[in-house]
Image (tube, rainbow, N blue to C red):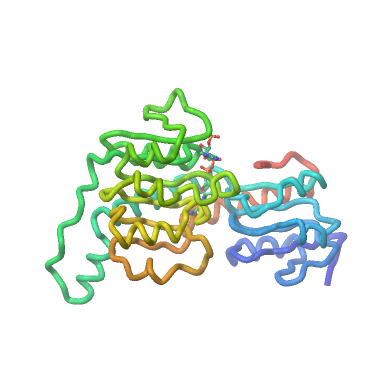
Length: 302
Ligand code: NAP
């Protein structure tokens, strides 16, 4: 059923909270399965796929509103060619994702999850953990989230290192143009750059070897940045010490090998998943859609 005059058709991809869906339902006719050709808006998450095949089926599409900041699943060449607006929800999730990155770093170093399991199983004597303070911390991708991670990491770090597409003269850390160089210079490597072709499998066996046997990998960015098979091998043979992972190559599938490793902490892509963050993201999605359909400037266009 469509009602183009008062309720434009909107294709709601998986991942929207019930509260966001309810707010959208006041303004749009929602479609969760097969979007009609009259669909004027898509709402999806940071990992949603909006490819050329989908766009070709939606000749009336005007806007793709993402609750998230990742847009590696969106065919931007195709949206731009058709002047379809794309919006994301930057800034409102930055602190939450950065908090989780630090939480994963500490959880891996101090064996918080393994110790929790030991205590729940009636245990008390456990192996000593690694000191978390005084480490050399590297951040790959020093944008909004990478900066927030670096700010939080600074009190733990003996040295801060980073890689981005360009050096940041105002940042008090050491720039490395190459991720293998970055990995060699740090004990903790935090991945905070976008997914997509430019970064696909950029953390490979060479980078993991450079990180070294005391090294910890934290990934809150996208699973596509990591060669997951190489990571599993590096964890199995002690090439690196541990990993804290919020994102995976083929979500929601997580390799069984990772689930058996006590030196690994796993998280179900929950970087932005706080009540406060999700509410702010939903409000920004709705504000962008309202602006678009009112003909006023978008709040956070790509
Ligand atoms: P951002 O502000 O755009 O920052 C991206 C950073 O990555 C920038 O410093 C950029 O370098 C750098 N970068 C981009 N391409 C690169 C490349 N090929 N090599 C090296 N560095 C590169 O993005 P953000 O808001 O911080 O978000 C970062 C990513 O986090 C998102 O793309 C998303 O995939 C992920 N994320 C995950 C969650 C979660 O729930 N786990 C939530 C939100 C976001 P320059 O500064 O030099 O341009």
